[in-house]
Length: 200
Image (cartoon, rainbow, N blue to C red; front, side, top):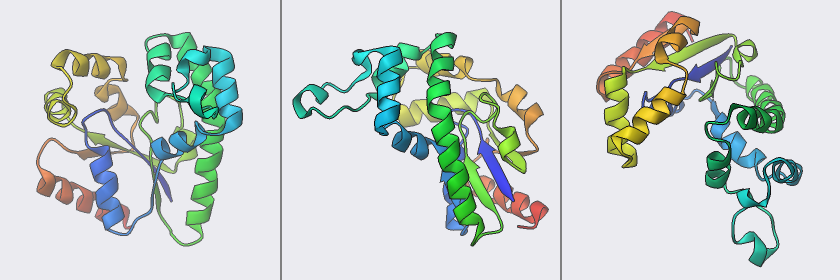
């Protein structure tokens, strides 16, 4: 079984992934894959062709080796739906290809494989998984966690949450919800309940 694990900023999906790994389940992190894919020469060339040299790291000029500044790229495409669509069309095919390759490898040794995907529903990846699981926290909890963790202003956090698909919408689309409004012990119980229900 391949399970897509998602959430929103500050809901705790990375914590759930860590706890699942500690229990011996394999978890593929799509963010790690995207960090690898963005170093592929053909991907760098395509991104520069579409978004210009301003998305490159400054040290490129010194070293002569091109690399993308994720921060500059984010600033270039942020809030522009057309640019986001172009970015996705460049990044997603190699990311999905690598994800499928890793799933195939892990399925040789494991019955259940988890894949952590931040924007699972936004980029319509549901068909890649046998089931989708949402790590849910209410908005107040999300804000508190991100303020504590990232040192951002509350306004910035609100803006990020508003830019993401609403958690209520994600709840409707998910096959299972792991509630995470409490502490670590409560989350452990939720994960245990989930594992028991699935019999994995």
